Length: 479
Image 1 (spheres, rainbow, N blue to C red):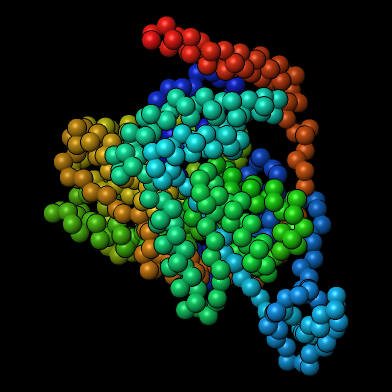
Image 2: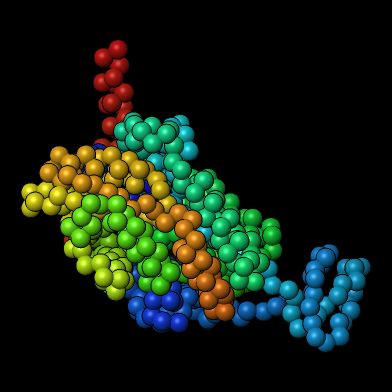
């Protein structure tokens, strides 16, 4: 994720109180058959689960068919049998009796981030305009963009200060491009030649741009790899929804075999790579055995887990258990804790909160602490500014004397190699995916619930409509 306490998922129950501060079991990646239009996300099985084919429940899957004729294309065709020649549209083309050569694509999904200070406000608008980030009741979704405009305008100055402190923009695109290049090389070493595409959810290059390029390149099989180790509605889920919308409208993608790796925190390569980084950073302390390992993960609103069935919390806790298990197998027996950072708005988020836990640890007499940004695989504002500056300062003020921080995985060779393995393992399960329209009758069934939404939504609409004028009038009186 990419923010200075300004990104992350937000849940608004029509409240105007918003503008406050803000093969082993581990070698396979998490995925299961997923309903692309559902708002209820059940946690996947944690053992031996194959990559998802994303077939909507109750719908018949499209058959994966290899094309017989290709018009005006110079294709290299392979077959152990004799080629058959057919005439089509006055062009003679060679047709294999087996199949056309496969053209594999890998789509890396990430959040994106502003590259300059001028990008901050429009980036925030894109973020808050996402209905998976600010979840308004269906009746009031017409307020999504006005609300996003209002919030992004108010939050932009503080966010600009954060980005200015790390060099004037997010490094996320540069790092993701480096990871894409490294993955391409790793796949080539495994005898898989693939085109790698980068799609950002809220800034350039947008996911839609990557999807357009995939179509232009006539990819024949696609693996979708979100660069989030754990699945959440607000991260991987939001980007997958973009793909869902494309599949619903585009016949090319409707027939394209696709495999989506929904989560991969449980893979041996990821777990061991994280343990390697932690072990290395622990060795820097004068008394490594006394260091508290402090896992800090990006938070989500509690309602995502309790109401929408987001598996993020369970997957995060499972992830920490796997990493600590690997460390214990190496004789590293340090104590550890998990907390959640980057909460925004008036609603309750996953607890415990990182800032509160740091103060408590200082009060408990903890003197040495190693921060581990466990839900991030790239350096960005939440590691470089929020953890390295804000949380470090808070920790030292609270009595912690020795501070360390594990770097993000980035292009660590063992990590990239494992991602390449995940792609190779996902390819056989690629299949055409089917979507269906959302069921409009699954919400607002309870009359009182419906009336309360309408009441508070009306208040919110009133505030949104009048606030800009009132603010403008107030500013004019001061000039």
